[in-house]
Length: 107
Image (tube, rainbow, N blue to C red; front, side):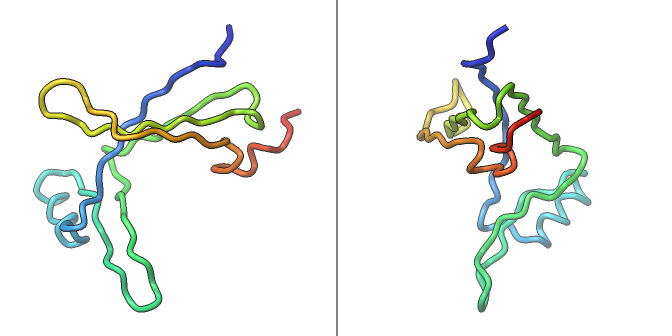
């Protein structure tokens, strides 16, 4: 079986800048699901996004035969309410740039 052109689909959520940690915790109490949230930039610290771990966050696994040679292709879609998502853009990079340990030979 050749997996040279295999495709895997993952789904994530957006950490909106108008949601903070307190709002995320309140959502968890109300709905059982914490929202991703934004931490504003402060003195000497860049802004960041936080995706809380919880029952709704599932890991994404990718199995490859030769990690040192794998190219990852990312396409970002806007999830439309009606119809299919709209492609916003694509890019690719070597797996070894994202996970440097993948460039080591597997024996």
